[in-house]
Length: 381
Image 1: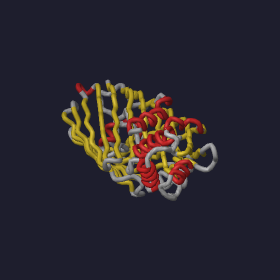
Image 2 (image 1 turned 120 degrees about the vertical axis):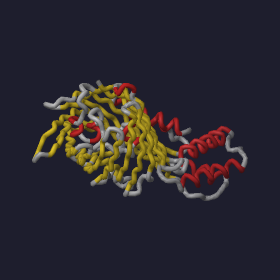
Image 3 (image 1 turned 45 degrees about the vertical axis):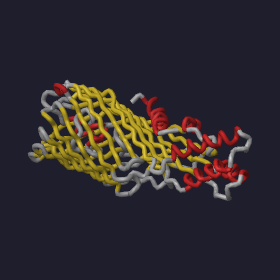
């Protein structure tokens, strides 16, 4: 087992949606995952529907096809340890228990390592959008999918390195997997207004959401990442996003309210709940010809799985340098004030020849065990 296998499994959650948390947008990801005031009209629904009406004079149509994002946090190498342990268990059992004492002790060492490991977490997303900006009413039709996965070893106590003790230990040890999958389809509407001689853009996104949970608990020797879908529970709901942006030359102040109506979904055994709560984010930004910058602050925390201590609430910083619309360099930093996710640095690169086709890539780093990456392909006319 390696990280590429896990990424393939995360993709398998997301891919069926054809289309919450981390947004699949390489431009915003490269700028510290900011975007409430700095996203363009094509990516507006992912951050703030009000930005759907904030576009350049020559923008008549936009197509995002697609954006993708993957993040993995495995700070204790759980993937590799489980893989190595399962290899040794297979050799041990195929030999009828006649394997050497050194290998038996090594298996016990793997179990000791797993007993102290922090939970493994992974997330991924994809998105597509079609935008038609217009001064009467700007419209963006989009779809996106998102999944997050939480894996935790549950290891029996160490009772020694004997054949019987180690065999009994791995047979009574397990790996627990929890996952949440999410798909939404929506249409963002926005329009600019002048209020008290100040320019504002207001937006709303009615959307439909499909939610799924997965729960798996198997003996460590039998655990397989591919078996996640045996416990699928489905639910769906209607929801709304709201947004507003104040615009003053290149300066912007904005607010985004995602998922106005709270929803939750349980696992098949009723023991775990995933909460999709209202998320409010404030932002200040600067969008100039050659430089853009933003600070986004979550005013509410996202709780996610109850009882798993996986709440997050971010402060994000981002900056972008733009070379006459043909190329962009980006950097950012994000801080989780709930200390669930390590603080991360982000970098990004954009290539936009003729300012009509845009290819964006981004990466995030918070130590060798927490990595992420994303990519976009967009067309604007």
